[in-house]
Each structure stands twice: as structure tokens, then as C-alpha cells.
Length: 207
Length: 80
Image (cartoon, chains in turn cyan, green):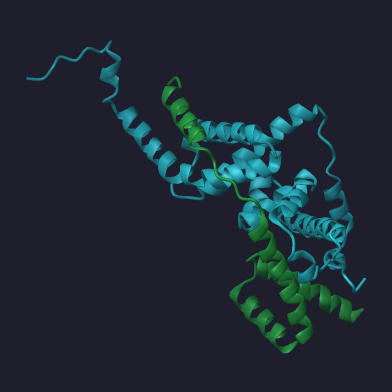
């Protein structure tokens, strides 16, 4: 014999259709979102260079992702979607902390005035023997010392392997700006690593 | 000047190749060019080894189990 249904008993609602959707959301969360958590934490840590801030950012990202899970198309690019949420959360925190008005992006102005032909004219190479003796700490420090917009594209492209198109979507900038920003970021990184190398007595003899 | 333009174009394509942004046809053309020009091969090797170096040396961190549990707990207890 079936038990009579008491509509005021909250446990009664657990068996209704909306909960079925909730279960699906939980599955998406477990199967598509959570596997990205190490990559997100790594990105958050390199953006903030602080374990507590990185934890807060990752937590905020996952809670937001769950809240807006209906906006996510199941089975698509969960990693890029989560990175975009995290990047936006970071910008909001960063703006709050720095208490500065939004600045004009000088890099985009430089890009605007640079012709496409001169884009790779300032390319820097770096001989293998200069950097091979370095430890991971120097690389992490050099990346950390980059301005945030440049650090972001290096982390997304060189560390996480996102495409230019994905980076453009995550950072809300045009693909052309992604390319020029990456170019400048890599040159800056090479310069910083060269400076570290020089401190340890390595020199590029071609100069 | 012409050499400089050819060099810029080559470097641009090397960078796009290493970023996975060239088509299969463009990749084949670039690799053929590299194969036929020792100077280009040297430049290609330098950029490729720099990328590999950065990827291998960056400190990778893993999230704590506590954080994962906190997130799950907060989702379970959130008001509907």
C-alpha cells in the first residue's frame, strides 16, 4: 500500500522532476567541471601568487559555475568556460584590491599603431644554454613578474594549451590582440630570464 | 629589407605552428622550408626548446582535498 503524500513534508519534493534536473547538474559538475580543478587552481595561483587568494578564486569560480550551470552547454568546452569565470572573478577582486579606476590598455594602443609587418620584427630568441641551467622557481618568478594581461596569455597559451580563439573568448579581446600580446609577453619573459641568467653568470656571447 | 620580411614571416609561422594555429597544409610547407634551410632549422629549434623549457619548469600546483570538499559542501547546502 502506498503511503499518503504529505505536500508539506520537504522530503516529498525530493522525488519530483526538478530534482531529476538537479541530479543532472550534479553529474555535469562532477564529470565535466571538477576534473578541471587542478588546472584552474594552477591558473589562480599564478595570477595571485597567494595560496589563500587562489583557493578563494577557485571556490568562487565553482560556486558561480554551479549557480549558472543552465547557461553551460553540456559536453562543450567546460575548461574554457570555467577559465572565463575565474578570469572575470580575478579581475573583479583585482580591481577591488587596487581601488583604481579602469585603465586604458596601453598595449592595445601600441598594437593599434604597430603595423602587422612589424609584428615579429622585435622577436627575441634565447639560446638553449642560457636557460637550461635554470630551476623552476626562476621561471615561475619571471612569469609572476609580468604585467597581469601578459601573464594571463602566457599561462593560457603556453601552460594550458588553449587556442588563440579560446584565449580571445576567455579574455574578451580580439584574436589579433591575443597574438600581439603573446608576442610581447614572450619577449618580456625572455628578457627577464636573461636577467636571471646573467646573475648566475650565463651570458649570450652573440650580443 | 626583403630578407627581413621573409625572416619575419618565417618567425610568425614558427610561432603559430608551435601554438597549433597552422593548417595541415601550412604546417607541411613550413616544415619543408625548415628542412631545406639550415638557418631556419636553428631558429626553429631555439624557439621550440624555449617553449618546452617553460612548460617543463613552471611550478604546477594541485588543489587540496579540503577545498574540493568545501565546494561540494557549499553546493549541497545552498538554498534552492
